[in-house]
Amino acid sequence: MHSSKERIRVLIAKIGLDGHEMGARLVSLALMNDGMEVIYTGPRQSPESVVAAALQEDVNVIGLSFLSGAHKEHTASLVSMLKNKGVTNIKIVVGGIIPSSDETFLRSLGVDAVFGPGSDTRLISQTIREICTKP
Image (tube, rainbow, N blue to C red; front, side, top):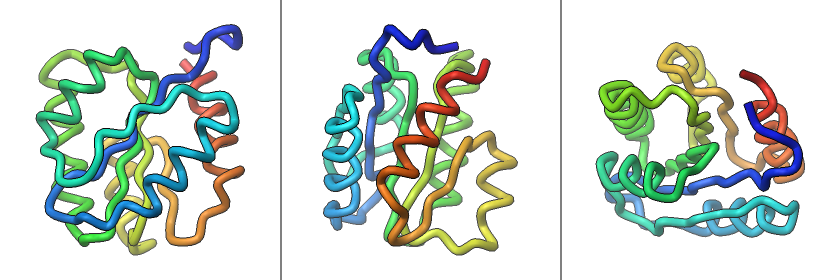
């Protein structure tokens, strides 16, 4: 559970070959402007590098941005790695070009929120604050 006195720490990552990072940068800036601490890993990350960075930076949330269509595979891999390391306290949000039909699958993996194209950054920030107050 997140104390209201602590700053929420969010790692924003782009896993895979997708190099389009404008949305990830926009969300990162919006979250920073809302008082969150944001670590942006940049494009073309591996699930392993994202998990390592999230653990090193002691983040509350991992935000994954996808435009490549590989969101199901990469998210499943990342969640599996976190579980194998016994990590249960990091929330996961996914955004980008995510078909609504894939949201149920992503949530079944343990994803806490899914945001599609054009999502309001205020809603993203509000949702992250809400999921960080839940145990």
